[in-house]
Length: 116
Length: 111
Image 1: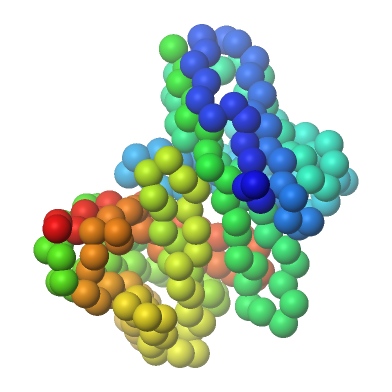
Image 2 (image 1 turned 90 degrees about the vertical axis):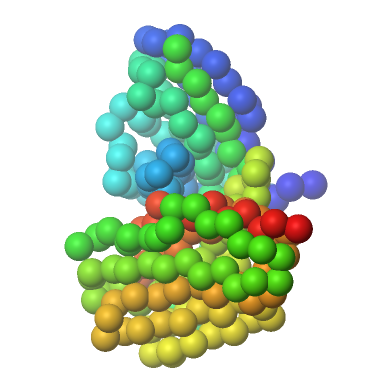
């Protein structure tokens, strides 16, 4: 079974609709992240969370919100979807470093979102 | 200052050839430089990483070369294989968790 799962894998929605993307992990990691991938722009951080009570905005948080329901679950919501939010969305997890310079981030398979 | 510039955007290499992808950064506070590999339909996965106190790191056919004075680092794939066809992202981090990713390079290795 995959360690980081995302649902749905594909979603088509209309402008103005509320949509939630879900992420679950079985790696036991404390840290979870939401990224957006656009062609030619790479991966950009939307939100990140170090634990259930610690949620932080990333580079491009406007128009998005998140919820960390449990250590293993981190959801991304688009309150009122717009066409320029059409993108590939990735959830990732990492563990606190232990003597290492930086975390290794483990990515889910992605959700392809299309907003018409 | 927070950007990581990656080139080329796409690359086509013959089987057995050398693939080279370059990245440049401005912020000298970056202290960790990983490369991630992404196959179609999959999430990125860590391939290899380097710290700025090392000029080169090699893992199998994959080598990172790091030039601290030029603020550049590159990924070399020796003896490139069709199975290496993927999108490659360089990244840089300050501290343990926050990465700035490059824009990605789509590599195609011809059989």
